[in-house]
Image 1 (cartoon, rainbow, N blue to C red):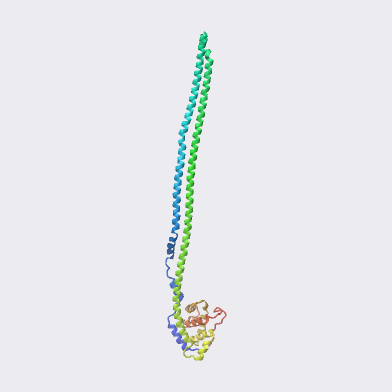
Image 2: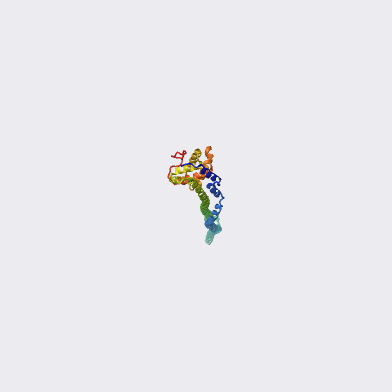
Length: 380
């Protein structure tokens, strides 16, 4: 196609005075850069009300366990205290019983000794009386006559006295043994009470530890739920912000797309083109259309036209959703390029060329731009 420098310069001048398109990424960044609400605090407050009954139930069980343990301890203390007190109170009864027994033994032996003495004395008196009746008073008055009976009586009395001492000692030993056994029973009962009260306290500690572990599990679940809810809130808020940003970018893109289509249409079917030229343009390939737009924009400056085409084609339109983003990436690629010719290209002219490339090339199934093509300028 033949170049039209006059139409090209006029269109370029018109595009350069237009306000430059806003970068949709900047729009999105501005919206998403807003500080989000305190979703963490809100989520924590909502989740806390859900888990509050579980904490209350655990606290109630801890209170009940503590109360029951205190009641059991008091009962154990009273029971074993009464048992030990009752055992200790038996000491007086034991002593009284054994003292009475020893007194009875002593009395019995004393009575036996007295009876032996009386019996032998009566026997001696009867012998003396009989001897007097027989006329042998001198023999009766001789101490040797009755000495044998006296000695036998004294012997028997000594035997009873010795037995009395033995019985007293045995009773004392039994009394001591009974006292020792009673003391041991009191000590054993006291130790059993202490052990059972300690075990009751251990049971309470175990129950409280178990309930505390349950509380920690509830706390962990609550934290996870709060974090998840905050994440959902945050994700929803980001999605809303993203949707708002996309809506704003779409509006800007639609406005620019409408404006660019009118401008490109003027380059495609501009004044001075014949009907045959317009028909040929409509039937040409996408690449021919791109080169045709470049020819109208840059006229006889083939270096700029070739540089512009290669720059625009270096950006892959297949990963971009709308022409506004594609144009922004082309302008960004130009600003990052150090080639003087590329840096001298007008943003307005690149905008028109980029719009044509996006509209013509994106629907096509082609290899990635920059791969498999030679983008040297081809004069039309």
